[in-house]
Length: 336
Length: 242
Image 1 (cartoon, rainbow over the protein chains, first blue to last red):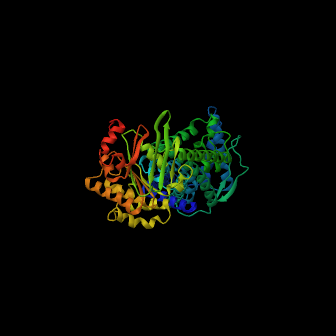
Image 2: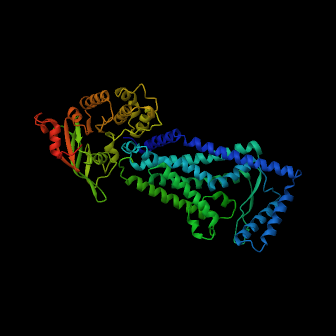
Image 3: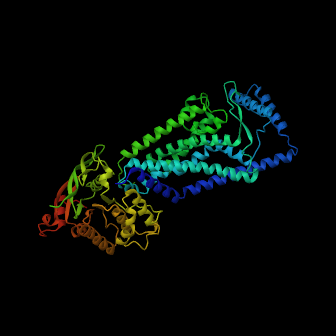
């Protein structure tokens, strides 16, 4: 008699071995590294150009200039209401930084890594997680190995559980790698130190535009920890939904394609359809948790950080439940 | 009569309105080689998939050493090794890694049997090469080693000689007889090659249109060689092509 927990450890070991041997993880890390290198290079160029134009750069003067520019433009008659609200928010945020004597644009390796939690979890990190997760189940069908896998003395739910756990594991690894690469690559240009720098957090994009009631000063490392913790919640949700697609499709390409189209489609929806409030129930529009935490405007009215976490949790639970039901009941007919 | 290790009882499978298997029953005894014969489309593949739990029967049940497959899948399958259709192993892993992978699913110290089984199927020389570089015959042999990891009482082989060269067929035949006679394993073999079945099997079942038409020892069915299995088969199936 083999005891269940022991078998599950062996199963996760099996799934991990297969993921590593398929070399998907290496491609994902390579893509991350390349994109980060490109972004850091572009930012470094921009910095050096700015310095050339303005050798005695005074950050207070330039932030002041940006704030008053925004204030001037939001008075304009033809500015859409949404934009006006955003400009009001941004101007107030800049003024708040001036007041607290903290440069909002200070750049360092740690600062860049913190920013990447938000930018990355909108689209890039979910896409990479979909690349790794979409073939967990579908490849067993397309390669015909499912007949061996499901005729061993292990209940189907255990097989799927081991795949799900492995998917969560590699999503976590992807996120950690994103953080480390962002810090290390940007560190070579902007310096590796500065985790203790003070940052302002807790801005709210309220109905009136700006709400500074919850703003406080924290150390950058604390802010980064919170941001990546939230990015992790998004990553787990993406991984859960990818599991369902991998179960539903026998072809890895179909599973991956569907997930990518959904992620990209959802991101477009967030940008263009801010009038349709129903879109806030869609999981993709709720993925940028670190941005919501940082106080950036949510794409749709009525969204809060807590709301988004709950929507993601509900989608994850439903997707995983559906995946388990379909996988345990399905007849495995001739490999097609 | 020897002990029954696997019993298929009135198996039926419907996909929507289409009934692929209507009523298939047979019994497998300890240490025998059992042939499963039928023309294409007779429901052989679906029946085999029901025997190993890949497809759930609409009616009927499968008993493996007295355990109901549907009620106690893990308990029942612990005693079964199988190759369904082609031996699809993980091509990007080596033969050894494939065996280790499935040994971890079986438990019971199966990992300790890998070396012995590799020697049995004569694969110890190439075991660390990637399966993608193997010939079909080699994959078939690793597949059999994999099926034997659990130290099974029942071995289910779907068309085991398909795609093998004459030497490979001969070797496979020897291996199957060895497993049945010396290790007491009940071997279930499906094949469309009547001569093959006649050579290696003790008993056979003939299925057509999803029903068992005949089941018995080859000696009984052919009236001790008065007629060939081929004649019997054509008579039973009405001459449909295999």
